[in-house]
Length: 287
Image (cartoon, rainbow, N blue to C red; front, side, top):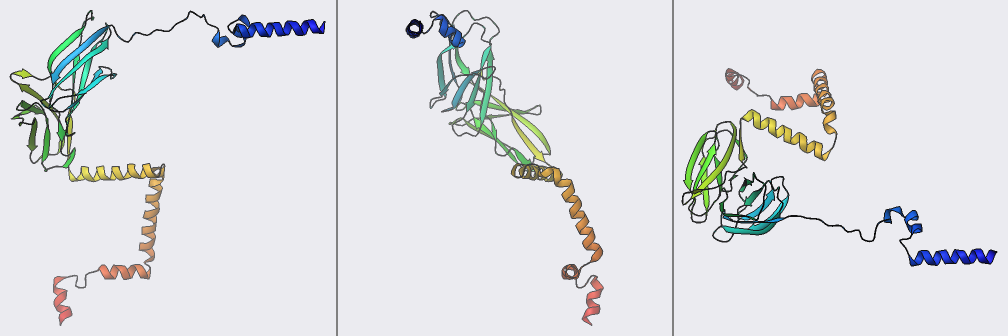
């Protein structure tokens, strides 16, 4: 009887090894219980998107969905022209956005094209003119200082800088560079954007802005103190919780020293006191 049971056990073991997807395997490893015909497929797009356009010479250009998913990237040639091809998109593709950085890395440009229809075929956009890059020499200045706004567009393009319902028109040079000096900036916050036109064709409207802060002396001090507090908190986490207590202790220490007037403190005060407190005392001491 024992020999018979042992023989049956070995038969079951051999059968299970020969068929690892048997019922026994499915009971022991239910996560592996699946049909041998099961397959996984994914569709990333049904149609192709192709784009040609221009921004500025040797600019770096990235294209994303309107929700920020990366699609493709390229670099404009020495004349500012670029092309992006065979980008897979779906029929419900809502649109796409461009991000451009000029070759000097001094300014940025962001713009979008929205698609308000169901896509039924490949989409092609030709001669898309991206807005100029825009940047600031300084993002924070003291009120009364000058600010420089600059960037790149196509060579000899007409550039318009807009801010606070004002507009400044100027022309890019042969490299595409433009610059405007905002002199004696009053205190306040200013938001700059720039558009361009080349041979009568306007650029897309920009989505990004360059923000300038011109601070009064009081605002500068407050910002500096805030920066110091943030740096202290970064280096010593939790230290700001004890700041009021620390100030209280410093105040008590000053009050105690003033009340007791220790000799060493009086010596320091005497050194800083004027020898002749009044103008006429000078003559009295000189006699």
